[in-house]
Image (tube, rainbow, N blue to C red):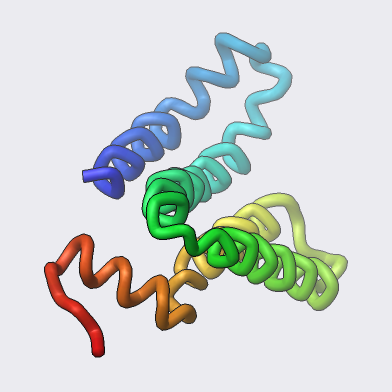
Length: 127
């Protein structure tokens, strides 16, 4: 449900980017709407991170949150370092969404977190 809500919100903001920019910033900033349209999709992964933070807190596996944030930072720095200087704002916006996705799904690298998620969502206990 949380995933679908975040998709719906991102879709609405993505489709309404030009209108939002026109109303709030004026027509002179309309070029930024294209970057906003891409970057808004990183909110899906932020939304999932916030939703999973309740599980992290309840299960007292706080290190997973730090690990997920560190993975996102490392991927972001690698992408920025190796990206060609000829790339524009749209290219970097796509890369930032990809690094957000990688950080959000880094939780799957932890056996403890996977076991907890399986218990909560699929009623399975991993031995």
